[in-house]
Image (tube, rainbow, N blue to C red; front, side, top):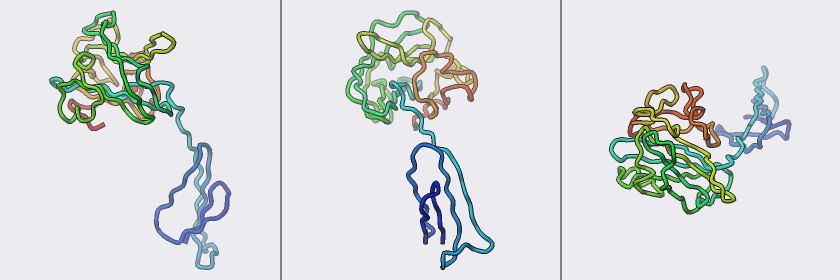
Length: 231
């Protein structure tokens, strides 16, 4: 059977071949294990292993951010917003603004969010004429903010102390990229693609060029084919 210890603590004896689950705090840890005989003596020659590693939990996000964008055929379009703040968030403090076809000002119309978004959950804004698969996951359906093509800008704003601050964005305000913006080195990625934020990203980015990146390595996004809705 097996003897093991965690961080030099007491020895634990395991008599089965079942997997072992451990609950460990953030920081550095060492697990040591050895095979022993029925009298708990080490085998000869010894069969031992020691593994050291570090657990590093990412800091909670300060605000909500876009986690997914789908620009599909027809009206199959949606935006997904993620809460990784560590607590529930009052959505009434957030709005989505939009601009079409390279226009510099934001449209006077905007979408105010409502309700409470739990930590680790997502909020989906979908076009009201989207496919049933999308509508089944939608929290809000409408046909303005979600009526985008690859060359349209969408921005997530937070309202605090009567100020409205841009905290995340798709596209570059005032620029008409043609059919769409490049993302992660993929040309026209904001058209006929689904963009999914990398799991390593824990906050929004108001700098679209930095967010989009120029390669798969430096982009905050993974670009998927048209009609990819499984994320």
